[in-house]
Image (cartoon, rainbow, N blue to C red; front, side, top):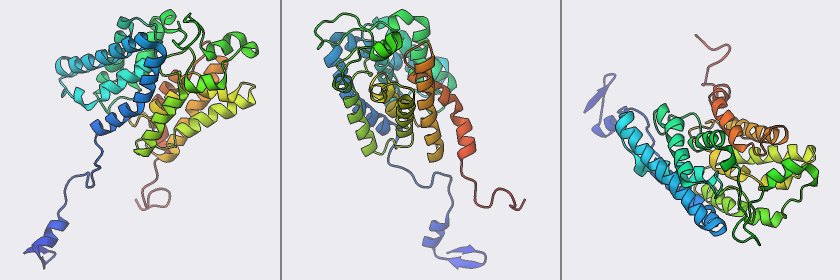
Length: 327
């Protein structure tokens, strides 16, 4: 028998009252399981990229993923003395997402450099998984775009097109020709029969993957819906085709798979709505007034840096805290 304030308690009650360190309730979802679900969600778009761009897509994806895995291992094992966890699928996700932001004509070694930069500068230097403040895949893409702008903006028509010549993306057409641009049909934008990065083509296949993430409760509506809605509304009021703005470029990929990253986005529902809407506003701002036709990458990176500030002002107050609370 155990005693509590002079009262003897049976052993069963003593066990129930024992206190241990948090977490007291554990989720069955661990990091590898969540990452595998994201891989499954990206699989349709990856198969679509292979269908549209054939060998070029395969080379870019394999190079980026292999580079991320190798860099993750080398950084953990030899540079930072961290536990090697390349089997948690996070490096695979980073490489796959990075490859989705790259053109199919990119040389394999350039994709490999991007993968190394994504892991080292976007993840390892912050302390590894869960410690980074920026999306690693987008860090890799930003470095590649600054280093090899021509290679990163050279596009190839999909294999299903009548000719396989290099052509501009839909957003590039708008940027270069403004209102006179002859944009692809909505159907081509939706199924992916257009030029662009590997993950920019088929909105349909990306939405299939996003639906799976919603089903598995990996993501919620709080970030992607305000993200897309902001671009739609602002485009509508500035004379640009809002549906084309949504289906073109990396908006669907960014809104559902990158901005929703658990580590680099706010933790509160209200903060996530603010985060998503701000990403949409910055995307619209860069597309309309910047020198580059796409703005999703930089919009998300900027908001990644602001996410801690959003959390600071949207975290609910503790019960009894605030004005008038006892000191």
